[in-house]
Image (cartoon, rainbow, N blue to C red; front, side, top):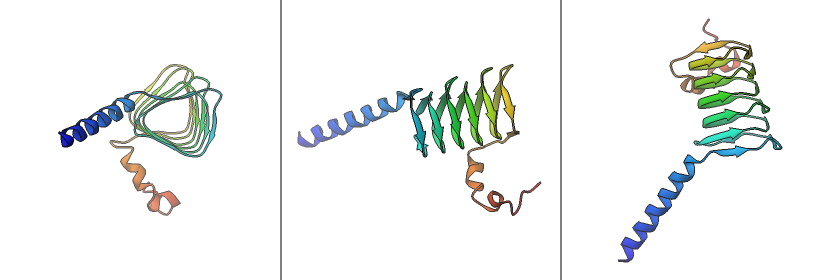
Length: 144
C-alpha cells in the first residue's frame, strides 16, 4: 500500500504540473523587465522587456514593447518588437510594429501592420537559431 500511495502522489504531482503548463503566464502592462525570459509554456506579454524571450507560445499585447530577440513556436504580435524574431508561426495584427528580421515557416500579416526588416521563410526557423552560433553569427560566412 505504501508504494501505491507514493505512485498516486507522484501521478497527482505530474498531472498538476501538466495542468499548470496549460495556463499562460501573464506579464502585466506595469512590468518592465530587463533580462532573459525562458519557458516552454505560453506567455501573454503586456509589459516592457529588454532581453531575449523564448517560449512555446507568445502573445504580445497592443501596448507591449519587446527589445531583443524572440524565439517561439507560435507568435501573435499586437504591440512592438525591436529585434530578431524566430518562430514557426507568426501573426501580425494591424497594430503590430516590428523593426527587425522575421524568420518564419508560416506568416500572416494584417493590413496596417508595420514591418521594417526582412521576412525570411525557413522550413525550421528555430533549428536555424542553433546555426546562428556558428560562423554566420560573426559574419565570417553569410552564404549569400
